[in-house]
Structures are given as C-alpha cells and as structure tokens.
Length: 238
Length: 190
Image (cartoon, each protein chain N blue to C red):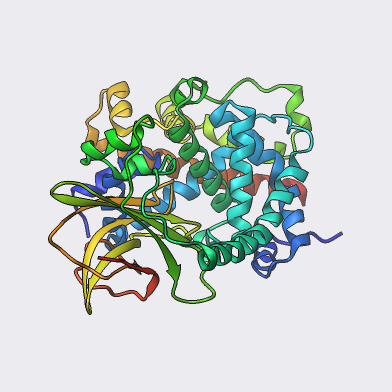
C-alpha cells in the first residue's frame, strides 16, 4: 500500500535509516507490493554494477581461514549449548554481583533510558544486580539463550534482558519479552537479534509482582498478547 | 567439464554439502573480495565481511529463491548489505566515508584482461557508457557510494521526490543496454 514511507526505499537500501525508521519501513514493506518489487528491481539491476570493480588480490590464506570458520561454527555452537546447560545445573544463585560488560548492541536499545546508560557505561561504579536470571529454552532443539538482570532502584526495577545466539529475525519479526503473573502475560521490551540488537532494557513499577519472564518470537512488534510459542523463560523470585 | 549451476550448488549447500560450498566459494571469492574491498577500503574488514557472508550462507540464515532473480545478484546484495552494516558499525576513520570512494568507470587497462569477470565487466562498461552522464553517475552514487536520497537531490538540484524515479529510469536503461550487449556476445560466439 503506497504511503509517504515509499520514499524511504533508497535510504533503506543504503542503510541510512535509524533502527526505528528501519523497523517502521520493514513493517511497511510487508504490505506494500510496489516497494517490494522496486526493492527487488533495485537489488537485481544494481548488482550488475558489481562487475565493474577491478580485481583486488585476496589476502593469502583467506580461503582456509574463512572456510574453517564457516565449518567450525556448527560444531562450536553445539558444544556451547551443552556447556551452558551444565553450568545452569551446577550454578548457585548469587544475590549480588557486578554487571558484566554487555555487548555493543546494548546501546541501540537504551535510547530514552539515559539514566541507565550512565550507570552501565561507567565501569567504575558497577550497578549491583539484585537478581540474575538465566532464561532457558522451552525445547531441546533450540540453541539460543538469554540472560536477565534485575536492578532494584528506589521507585522501580530496571530489567535488562540480553539474548545470545538467537537466530536473527526476518522481516518485522521480533523477540518479544513478556512478564507473566499467573497466566497473564504483559509485554515488556523487544529486540530483533540482528545488527547487534540483542537486548532490551525496561523499567517496572516496584509494586508489580510477576513470577516468570519469557521470550517469544512474534511476527511483528507491538502485540498485546503472544502469538508465538515461548522459546525461552525463567522464573523470578519475588 | 560441465559446470554446476549456482542454484544447484546452493541447494546442495542447504543439505550441508561441504564440497558444494567450497566450489561456490572458489567461484565467488575474488569478485566478492574485490567488491567488498572497494566499498570498505580495508583488507581486514573485507575479509570479515566475506566470512560473515559465507557463514550466513552455510547456516541458512539468508534465503535464496530462484524467483528472486540470479543467484549472483542475490549474493552480491548479501555481501553489500553486510559490508555497509560493518561500515556503519565500525565508524573507524578509514571506513566512515563510503561517499569518498572514487566513481568507478576508470580507463581500461591491460590488467583487466586477467580478471575472471572481464567479459562481464566489458559488457557492463559498454552498457553504462551509453547512459547519460547524470544517469551513469547517479546509479554509481547510489550503489557504490551509498548516497542518501537527499544528497542526490542536492547534487543534481532535483526535487527529493524525483530521485527514486530517476534512479529507476537509469537502471532500466542500463538493463536494456546490457541485454543488447549480452545478445551481441551470444551472436559473436556462434
């Protein structure tokens, strides 16, 4: 369906849109046939230009480095999951520990949470985590996992959820975080697990009590109730 | 020796055929590296991009369907997106200015003869030369330099809203001229 957004196609193609703009545009793309076919045309027709490049000598040994990384990747991912499961079974819950260094992707989701940016980026005074969570896969085949950290402030709790090794979402899919009280899920933050966007930070009123935090894969952001199945979850102590 | 089509190699790769992966890698290594190097102007970054592209290919994270056009186009798009992604993320001195890259239609040199994709290069070059100067530049600014729409509008002093259609027109002309060049080649080979 045509809209003002159609004009963002070229900037989308060249990755000039902000994360929010990009997500909005991708959502638009799902329903706009014109944009879909124009994007396809843009990709197809410009790709011939690739042949104009002059040859640049390939660094020696690159093939071996690349292919061994490609093929090794499979094996090491399987091993990591096994080890992770072992760790969970033997690990005791620690009440307080300093926040570990979080990935660069975190910066994308802290926009608007200026207060927390200051706290986390200042390594001299690490915040104290009241509770840490380890979100576990609902099914054995699932390879990713997520960690959660809850920091209690005066009026509210800050919750950080960071996904790891989650397959990147496509189109307008997102990993949606839910806080569950009994059988009632409340949507919290979300992330896409692509381009380093693998975490979400949000604030919760301290008077709220919830017993589980879960992540589902939703077909789009903004769902009030989960459409997808729960892929990762952890219980929360009150 | 009969060569296996890209699309077939891709199917085999989806079935985790390592040999197919290696064949495909050999086929595209040089051009992908040269292309990504052109965009990033950094050898390590270019290698990092190549690695990511082939990892994605192997893991089946990115999906190709033959109704999405040529496999090579899809692969180039994947590599380009990965390169731009890295450029935006890294923002090191060397990588930040994609826009400073020289436009690409340089004079022919005898060194070209040695390039694997020399035939394709000659065809595209002939086709692109048939475009008007503005059209020739505009598509290169979009593809290699990653200009924003606004920057293109400013450069050519045209309304922002017309940029997209100008780009499209230039590309369609390129497609037409390229088809003519390619059919010329088929006739010569007969």
